[in-house]
Length: 164
Length: 144
Image (cartoon, rainbow over all chains, first blue to last red; front, side, top):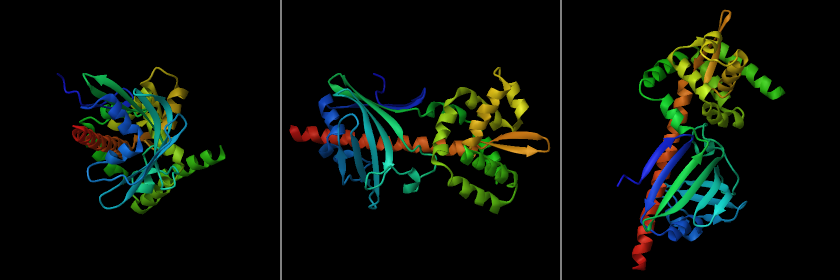
């Protein structure tokens, strides 16, 4: 069997596909119920102290991800499309503790983060397990990889020098 | 719009005076960092277009004047100019005047920043999905 876990950047999207060894309804609930979501939302050693979900089209979510050092990163978004057990489409932005959208610079991250992205998550039953595909729409990551392939790094350095 | 024209004029002004003046460059960089939110987001829209990606690819090899860029495309001069304007407005290209010529120069540092961001974002998602994977295992182990 091919490696079912795949992260690729093709076409116009950042796509991540994962197979979870769990039934679809459990995976679905992990994404859509706050009590579950709080338990995994963030890298290892991060915690999720707060999580609000108004799970309907037009409803919002508001999550907190806390770093091991105690820094809180809030995110928010609106649900655009919901197909139970199959699909979630929502927006994704950084936020403050009150739920207002903030730019990534609020958290000390680069100025090139888009203010709002669209995230598309689909769930499929796959041999008793769940195949989950996450896509960021409109993110031309694939093209950027072509643009920045080997041989360009020298150009980067030369030009960076000439511009300072 | 009045504001946009003003911003463009300021950008041309600041880029014409940059040269090797590090202090001026830092000031201009800081000033540019504070500019319109919408312009920063447009970097993604800018590079989504295949013609614009070709233009960046060309300019990454060497700066070219507007004519030299346009020659490489079948589309009309005004259409090429429009693409260049978009790339310049979102900061991926710098247009510098050398005598009577206007040269376009790619700002690859900026492009690299964008690529780096995508990579970090992907890593963050991977980490979250790893956590989900573990959580699902735990949940099911408890049930047994």
